[in-house]
Length: 82
Image 1: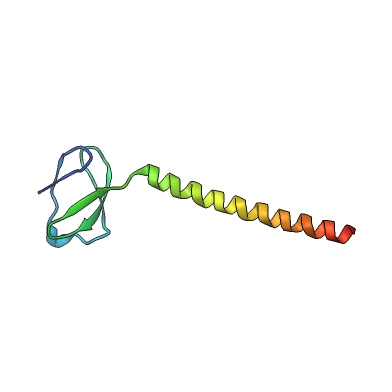
Image 2: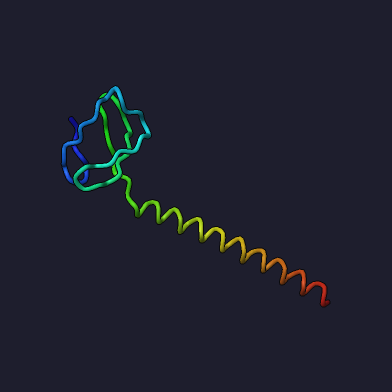
């Protein structure tokens, strides 16, 4: 028997039936938990904040690329005018 790292509820998991990387859900607090180790089973909570941070970083990277493309186009326009 293992416990949810967020709320401490018991989670009934058979060590032989889970694999590393598998996502489980806590029946009490409904947290998503990733199996990071088997024998013994170890769970890490998956926070929504991490996913939101990754999405924001991807969005910022796309915006920077667009800005660079616009800057390059502006420089070409200036060169053509001369």
